[in-house]
Length: 252
Length: 300
Image 1 (cartoon, helix red, strand yellow):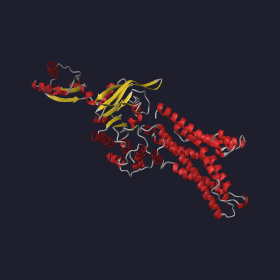
Image 2 (cartoon, each protein chain N blue to C red):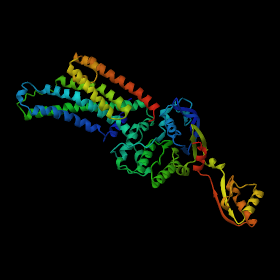
Image 3 (cartoon, each protein chain N blue to C red):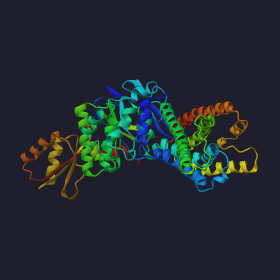
Image 4 (cartoon, one colour):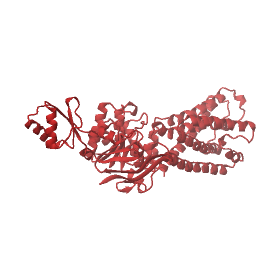
């Protein structure tokens, strides 16, 4: 059960940990990286509207490199804070069900993750407005009603659910940030290899699951949404079972 | 009435290591209960079992006369505990730190200043500004926040300086006497625990070697009497004749006796004086918790 009070407590716990900084700084970093390539180049290189291409570049870079690290840091912040403070046993002895504690932590992760994607798009919109004002020679056809923008946010968000599950599992199990980072490097290399070899058409939102690739390549959003949510749901169920197994048998 | 009762507990880490076998333990309500045992005896594991962190079958652990297996969350909501001093969440004020549990357990917010005052801490301080003793007091305030009937503390004086130990001891004593909270604590510091507990359990080799009131523990323990007189042989004869006692040692002109209790001491001295024996030195040594503990765990 999701409880507002528990979510508030979790936010308070993370107040000075890493999550808030990650939420604001990571998207900013990507936006600065991508927008710099527009600001320093001649407008002649961009004869058409740059609004949608800019966001596609932005989402491409974000989902390949920064989103996984963003997820790792958010997971580390929400779950790792208990590892760091050695507090799992005190959490589990408060008379609250373990599943309630874990599910509220996952809810917070989803909120943080969605927020970081929304922050990314907001930064992007701000940069495009800035480009339009400072470099009028660029064609920036601002269109807030273009559904592609919202679909992109939704797809990145859904695409990251699998990553969150994998890193949550690793973070709870091994209690160190090193292993998720190593896993990130490995999975990114595999992903790039697949993209370079053109085994399937690379689509950034597909990271990290190959199953999702195929559905997104067909632009079958409904399947993609169903599979993402199913992976997340099954992942949460598996983690709840594994956490019980881990904390019941090993020394806390 | 027993507030915690463990019946015939069997618990093993794995197939090769059995920690508790036919283990029984009782703790009375309103008592300060001390759990002592050598390293690896299973003190922390027992606390974790009581807190439901390690599951055991039904019919083994009863708290408030309810089976922990079937009523875990209801029971735990009436217990306050800290197991092995946790690191505090960084950069929070103490008020914010306690607010986390207040939000989690839906506790009235007025309890935060109340318990901060009881443990003598300022809510505006930051968690990273605290000494070890202050951290322990904050952890106790956190455990008290839900107004528990039992407070379970694992090594509450671990690593503290003498002032810190005295502070925590007084706090525990006060919580028991003034607020009627039953306290279950484990500690390595026997001399320290001896000063406040009313009941104890000594555990060793998976068994409870002693479980009961601390006063009963010393009831049957012998008092050692050491005497030095102007005529030791005469003294031995008189004591033997009147009290039917034999010395167990006569080293360096000191005669040593083991007395069942020190109630006969006055009569014994009077008898010697009446027989013109000049007592040059006399001392008694009662057993303390340390010597009793060593006796119960001597096979280690």
